[in-house]
Length: 280
Image (tube, rainbow, N blue to C red; front, side):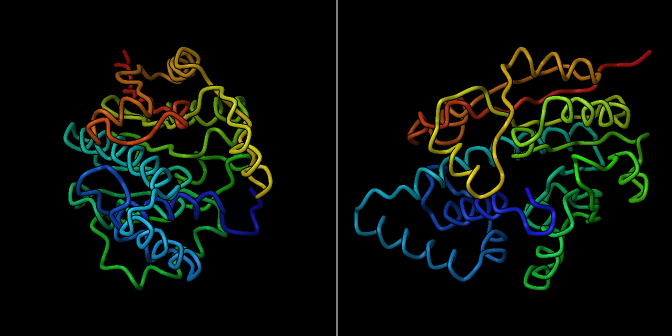
């Protein structure tokens, strides 16, 4: 990703959430009205065109995209709700992009939400916030580059409290980073995670979806890393976390869409939900 321009993959994910909010997903009652606010005019036209195609009885590739993003979002939302119910009073979103959780999840009332991302994406997002209702969570924007900056320094500056349980979301990021950068960041997360904290990591296993990899490479944001569930569990354990759930697209399809979505092409997408180990 080029730091001087907003993330194109973040825009792609936002389009997927907007398509799902427009009713193209098989996830019942999926709602994320915040996504439409961050779309370009061209992307809004794509949403309208896809809606017309589906209404006319045509199968649109946009439905597959909407399902992938809606299922991933639903899985993470459930884990966030569980973490807040368990006592987390801080939410850190690493690589937040155009995330709308602080504006749409009632569970985040009174929760400090730290949105960590590179400056260009954050600037574009903040320019649109006047179009949204007031945030439910207490939003703090934290600018950094994961490849070069210290997460500790950035969060210290934003007054994140390491002595209070935190829920961490790392969605749609680690596949763009080297294993070494991910492990360094996990160590920083672990050092700031009081007992009772939760880490939600979205990652990819190895796959042969050459077209998808080529597309992301052409837009300047190549996917360069993959893990097995065992490798991810080991890396999380090194940072002080124990995996409580590791699930994939097919699992989410059963949990949130009654198995109706076409998800075989997204079989490599996974989410690990881990808790901090009790420290002596």
